Amino acid sequence: MSLVLSKPKDFLFMAISKSKKEEIVSQIASEFKNAKLSVLTDYRGLSAEEMNELRTRLREAGISYKVVKNTLIKLAIKKTDLSGIDSKIFDGPMAIAFGDDEITAAKIIATYAKEHGSLEIISAITNEAKILSANGIRELASLPSHEELLAKVTGTIAAPLSGFVNVLGGNLRNLVYALNAIKGQKS
Image (tube, rainbow, N blue to C red; front, side, top):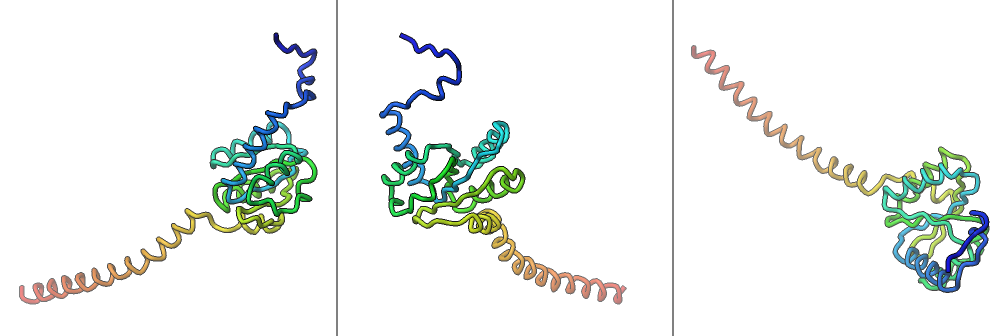
């Protein structure tokens, strides 16, 4: 027996089975548990093409971006250590970016929100059950990434070392110049 729909959009109005809802809730709960930062956004106003572009940017960084009903999000939150979070922040249509680190998801979402005014940052939830405001996310996004910080530290450590090598090399160069001058005087 196959399911025949009279119109493609009829599929959108079909009820989701209880087992499918439980599967979605478990998946979202797992995403919340594994994420260090979950950025909540209001995606209304983005075209399908813009939404796909955002998803692609996030996917390339290893971040999942999911649109889920608020009731399912609230059930998923109850299955995590984040159960103390006020569920009032889950209001209206939203999509959530689940980031493996504290900065990357915020950077990508904040950059995309600047480029496309229709994407609105609502808030974010840290893995420690703290809620960040939209301004807090923008500030977090302005911080350098982990790789940038490592490059700066490496440069800071390398600068004195290269200066020290130049000083030692300068002494040797001066010795060679002095020896060449003495050689020139004797010949």
